[in-house]
Length: 66
Image 1 (cartoon, rainbow, N blue to C red):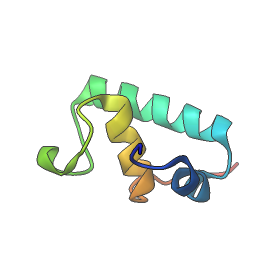
Image 2: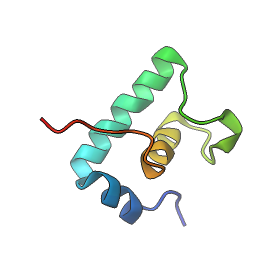
Image 3: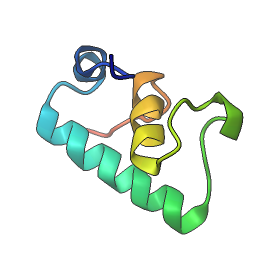
Image 4: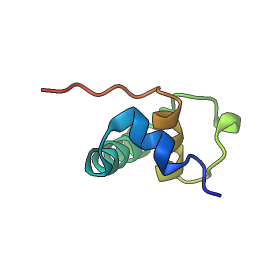
């Protein structure tokens, strides 16, 4: 089973397309700034995309709807 599950992520974001956009932007931000929302040992994933997905699942990333 994959963590976090797509069902939980879609409850946070609402759309697969928005989820992909948000996670990609967050992963690029992590690469550029080396800033993470959680401690390094709290992440289950070793890749930035997985870490960004975990941050979305834990509701650490908030999106503005314009």
